Length: 93
Image (cartoon, rainbow, N blue to C red; front, side, top):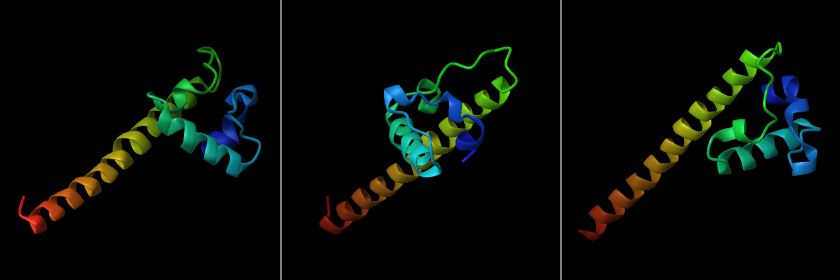
């Protein structure tokens, strides 16, 4: 939502990064952000260091990386590991 409100101009529609509506922006960030190695920082246009939104953009990129990529994917991997452990215990591996 923050990317939609403040950084909509950083999405390049010619590369398939659409952010015309909140739904399009959410789907774009979720789809491309998880597949990109460094999160959404690799997808959006490079911020100008002298610009007024430079610090906010860096915070957005880092927060997406920390929250979505590190935290949520670790939760998902934890559930998968737990399921394998339970199935191994039930099957006496």
